[in-house]
Length: 216
Image 1 (spheres, one colour):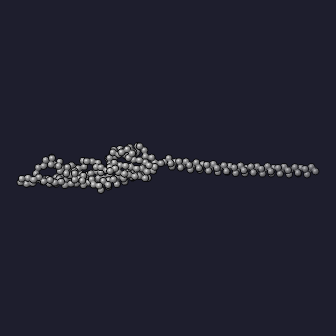
Image 2: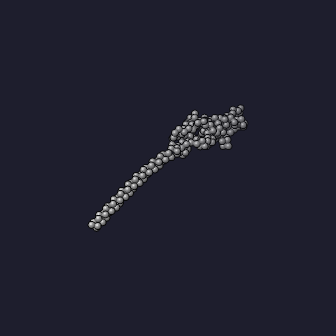
Image 3: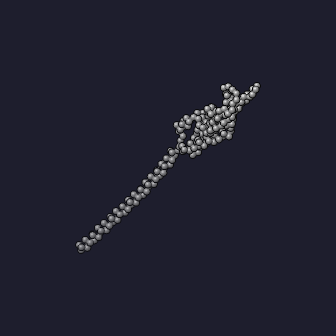
């Protein structure tokens, strides 16, 4: 009788032990699942924050034109966009009693067309969103002393001529060179070169949309 009771108690203890093991296993499984869910949630939060941060960085990296950059461009001063070499043959005849005196001289000059950056007006360069709009001063003759007097030579000369006569021929050559070179076509060519060079300059600074205008 005692042996039967002993076996019965032993079976009850084994069942109880199995129940405890099963309960512990279920608790561990639930714990592991909870940890996995928590890791997934944390990973999603991290990815979201990283994405938001990268978007913020893109906005902060927007290119802005600084006052120092504007001052540097203004400090360039005269900026040449077209150079024109010219030569003029000027002659004059002085009537004499027995014979005529004649003087023929050849003048060489180089006319430089461009803009004077010291003449820019306030607000000449503006940034509107991702665009840069530039308004340059009018194209002008950068150097009025464009005749190279060292190269000037007399092609033919008979008789004596005074300094005043020479000055008169110089003025005629000066006038002819200006008339020949300061044409609407050459001014337009200088304007196009100005637009191209400023466009390239601003592109190297990182700006994508550049509009260049030249004053009239």
